[in-house]
Length: 167
Ligand SMILES: NC(=O)c1ccc[n+]([C@@H]2O[C@H](COP(=O)([O-])OP(=O)(O)OC[C@H]3O[C@@H](n4cnc5c(N)ncnc54)[C@H](OP(=O)(O)O)[C@@H]3O)[C@@H](O)[C@H]2O)c1
Image (cartoon, rainbow, N blue to C red; front, side, top):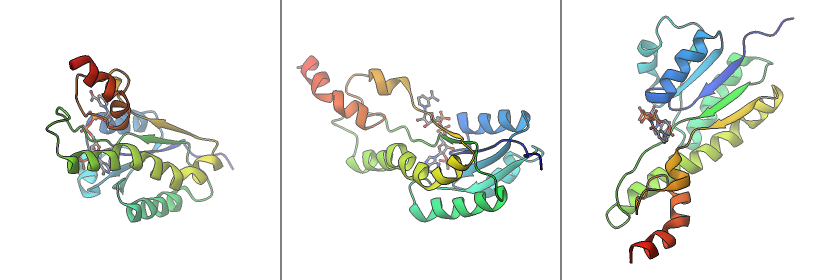
């Protein structure tokens, strides 16, 4: 039996890069699982787009990851998942002296642990299709901006050097 169209799960599909990617891949004939914290919005957002299935998904909640996996696996039947695009992310801006640690914790939970956790949960489906995982990040991870906390760990690793440069 011929395989249906390629399939992909995109996290953070409610806006920005995620939403654009859903539209683009749907236009190319992919089956797109649009991971969103509030999927009812997706029904309006992606109305009229072929092959788009809004999936409730909060990458910071373990139970949500497993529920989303169940829903995606059900749609795919025996086929695996060709792609996972880890796009969901939070920008927490501000100098390290001022950003509340609770905000940094939340950011780390979504931007770092969230990507690891969802990859773990979906890896068997991705392996079944010999698919791939794409992580969306930003140039600030590599280069950093002053004493900004943005993007968490990579910046933290460079913080001593940045503090030294400012002293
Ligand atoms: N745009 C840029 O210039 C830029 C630069 C560097 C890096 N990036 C990275 O690229 C990615 C997309 O950026 P963007 O500009 O398109 O951002 P955006 O418009 O703010 O979209 C972020 C998406 O992530 C979702 N999200 C947040 N927390 C989530 C959670 N716990 N579980 C699931 N989804 C969650 C948001 O959903 P809600 O609507 O429910 O909040 C939203 O759909 C992010 O990872 C960002 O860090 C973007």
